[in-house]
Amino acid sequence: MDRAISASEANQHFSELLRDVSEGQSFTVMSRGRPVARVLPVDRDQERRSVDRLLKFVTSLPVRHSGNWSRDDLYE
Image 1 (tube, helix red, strand yellow):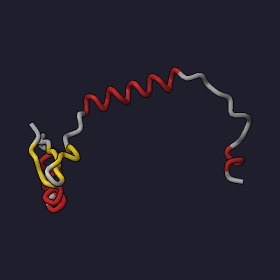
Image 2: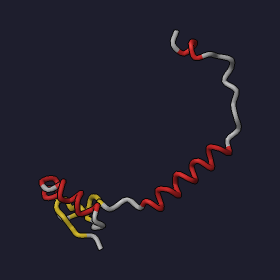
Image 3: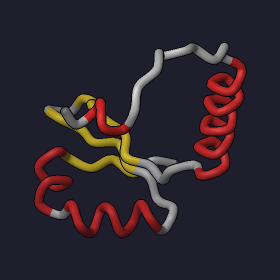
């Protein structure tokens, strides 16, 4: 469950907030009593699945010919 924290408190204690997030806690940042942001740990498994899906998509794209050029052509 998220812990509510004011925007000013998050700003003043940002390093501590990041340490707590790295330990698994999550926060809802409130501004004038309304939720405006969530700070939560990165889901490494989901991140890896996203990268895998992107790589699968990119490798499925057709190879395009870019013409004949050399490395020297890039630096003329």
